[in-house]
Image 1 (cartoon, rainbow, N blue to C red):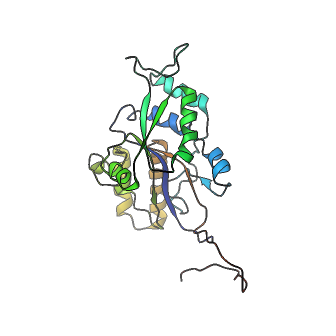
Image 2: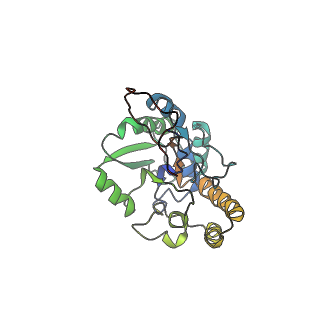
Image 3: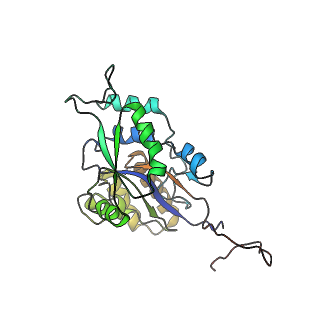
Length: 249
């Protein structure tokens, strides 16, 4: 049922308080290794759309935001530029200290169906991803306490977005907040503060577009997918189906 429900951001998130995820080149490389289109086709029957905004389904979404296309060549260039090199004959990327690029991906039971593909794509460029599988409650607790490296996460959206909690630097070092990646950008802070004070929608929307652009291009989220509809339902066509679904007035 298409009811134009706004959606929040979702995808792979990075704890930027832990190395090497403080480096935007690393996060951007991961975004180019996250094959959203193939996952949508292989697992989700092409029922989803790729995200390129934190404010999907609202006028606050910046229409000029880029999509992070799957591109291992670009990803490898970014990783090399950040100091991670795969030497001839080696299986994994290593840094100047000889450490291999290895990390734990926090996940819940059933997630391997999706993220085993991501694991293989990372392996192809020399990144070793190990699954840290816990139950849902433990995973959410670790996320909110920032006791993770990389994880899949997402939030709901609203008709009038309120992104301060997710993006303002005053929450960057706090726990149990929606700024789970520790975003910390002075320019973004100023835009968020101006956005909060502005009640004229014609002025708020351009501010939101700037906020959205910075958030997307900082790659704290390797954005994934969302549904372009409000709800899916199984029904029995016994007495006929109305032309429109249920809605609020």
